[in-house]
Length: 259
Length: 245
Image (tube, rainbow over all chains, first blue to last red; front, side, top):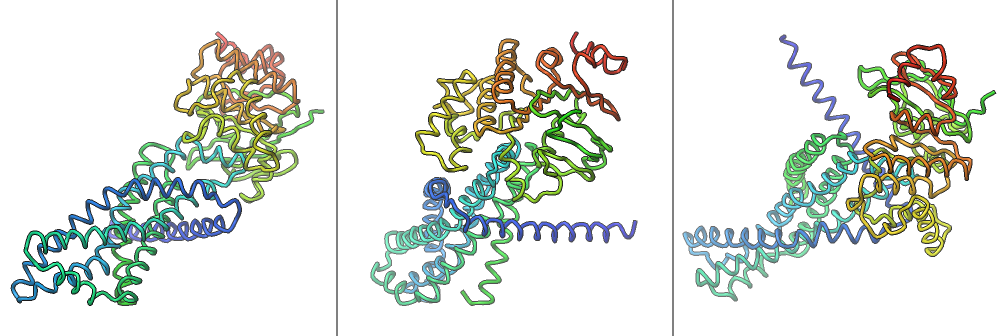
């Protein structure tokens, strides 16, 4: 009885290591597929549309809302110190360095990542992946690679969109609602944001998150049990594992490279 | 002496703690229609998946045209699968593609054909299975019988030497059953393809099978359909007569 929890812990640790190993092998297979012809550019474009264009509205609305909240909170806080002129810097740095890539990745995990897992999981249930194997077509090459690379490509673009709409939201609240001078908002933003440290750092985070979400969502779908409950569990797992991993990796990147 | 195209040798297979096959050995003759019969959960579909290398046995070998698929890597399996066509029970058609693209896909992937040649092949196969007007439809827009026929057309489009057919008659009305049956027989007679059909439809089986295998609890009975149906094994005759009734 007393050793039961140790056994459970050991089993969980073993499952985690096996899962991590499986993920690494899967990433290797995607990498190999990337350098194996054909390129599947058409499928890649289709996925770009599904993952990117169809996420446009949710990213725009959320970016605007987050920017407006930042503008409001930032203005009220800065007003206590008589520093409302720095609102552009506060909103800009928060969005570019942290909130833009992180929130975009979390939103993309919930919308596009879960959809990718469900789609591939359904292909497992309906034997479509086995059908491809029997036609001598590698499902990693045909199904997974275009989706994973599209996610990697689309994440920095969506993050950029989130940041731009967020900056506009902050401007709207600060200038239109709170009466701050527009020039002061923009000049504070311009003088505080460094292209190399802030913008490129943000881009690096978005690319890393795109890689993570693409990998986790396709892997979970590919490995889902061939039942409806299996697809449901895989989809949930993508959202949970993806979100937690994004936040942990964000901390690691920030701590190691100060981005 | 039976000329075996597919051969199982001392095969053992289990799903978790549930044994499916224990030391199974059997052979399927080249160029003939072999039908595998058995109760639910007897391992009929697993047998086809083993031949295709989609699942791996825990022991034993599966010789497919001389290659032991149980010992091949995924990459090597792709080479063997070029000789195989498989019609899945649910069709396994890619639901985001039209029927035309589903059939054209294996030819495009194989390469070496112009789009015009591919179009000719696809239309030829669709006509052969009685679906000349379905090329623009998505799998979701097809009836159960049409899905089976489209899946059969895709399975034979690369001209395989071995065709694996999983429950071709399940859920079909008698007319559709007859149509699929005649298409399968036509494919076999015209191209001399080795055909392994998994079914629980005894009347169809008795009409089309050259070779019959019956998966019974703990053992296998195999032979020519007439010989099995009128043989001395009461379990076999009861199964065939009971299902036929």
